[in-house]
Every structure is written in structure tokens, then in C-alpha cells.
Image 1 (tube, rainbow, N blue to C red):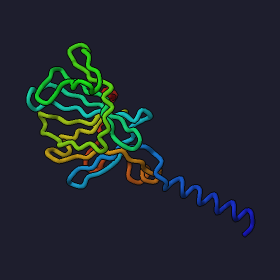
Image 2: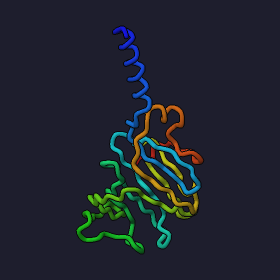
Image 3: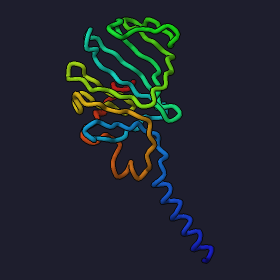
Image 4: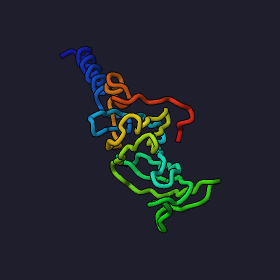
Length: 176
């Protein structure tokens, strides 16, 4: 094989590997109905799950990040301690922030996050750097699994980043 042919083959193999290797960090979104897709999280690899608490009717925001290939709970923001809510001693630090109570520095690895998307009144939403996904509207009463993923350039090009069966809503206000 001539050196030029060898270099050409190496270039083709390199380009193919660049398209196929899973290099882009992403959040995998998978619903029970089989709908699945990926979201780009941006450089900070942070996303928020927001919802209205089903008992007290107040908003809740749980912020997560992707670290070492798993989902990690970073903080929670609530307006009052409803059923099952509040600061657990030794788990992060809580402080008032206007009308909200924020528990930060939780740093609890959860691996995969399983969300049972509530009805329109609960309004589960996934907020990320480029927009949001209305989980309740797309998969009401379904279990939605959120997990760390890496996807190839070819996957981004052919499948697109948003979950199948649910249109993302690009919005500047959706940034966590």
C-alpha cells in the first residue's frame, strides 16, 4: 500500500470514528411508551425538574447535574415544607431566598432519575440550558427515565436532540 493510500485510509477511518464515537454529553429521556431521545445540556451539564406539589399546590424545583456518568441531585427549591419536603439535617445546607427555601450542596448521586409525569395540574417540566420539555403534556401518568448519556455526532445529525413524541419548547426563561 502506498503512503498516500495509507493516509487516505487513515483519514476515512478517522472521519468515520469521529461520526460514530459517543463523545457528546447528553441527557437521555425515555418514557414507558418507548419514546426516547437526547437533550444537550450545555457545558454545565445541569437540568431542573419543576412541578407543582400535589398536596400543597406550591412549586418545587429540583436541580440536577451529570457527573461521572450519573445523575446527581444538587439542590431543591420550595416555598414551604409540604408533605415529604424539607431539609434533612446532614444533607446539604438550607437557607431562605426571598419567599423560597433552598437546600443546596445535596450532592446525592441518584444514577437514573425516574419521574412519574403528573397531570396538567402537577405540570412536570424538564428545564435545561436550551429550553424545556413539558413532561406532563407529553407523557401524562407515564414513568419517564432521565439518565446520563453520550451520543455520537451521527446520532445528533440523524435523530436530532429532542425526545421523539414530544416537542421541546425553546425559551430563554427556561434556563435553570
